[in-house]
Length: 182
Image 1: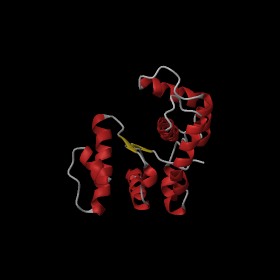
Image 2: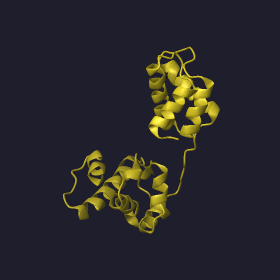
Image 3: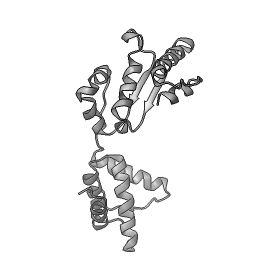
Image 4: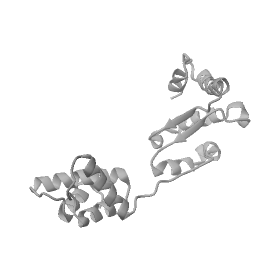
């Protein structure tokens, strides 16, 4: 991860880990000082980082002994990330987090609009999902977009397999069962 940061900022990464962390911190600080812009590091799927990688992020935030913030870091991940950060071994990083946000699921109305919007993007203007099917999908997915997507695709497949023109409640329930969202 530190190699990528140093590389992205136009420098050659140090071979030794002990010198790589300060090099990355200095490169971020130089970017901030030279261009007057705050670099932003976005780490998606941060819940998959191990403790050593999270500690490397903390070390970057410790540059100049907390006298300034030469960069901003966004850790984006599943709810397990929040739980892991509360572990004692990651307490120092957890204390440095200024803003936290947890995405809530969509409302039933939002889910219906979301599915309808995706159908229209795909070129389908007529009703493809019954109201009951949308309710089943919403409830099983708890309104989370990725889960709604997965269940909707599986429900479409189930309806197609039964040669049905509309995804009905039964097709949605088959999708829920097959994906293990029940």
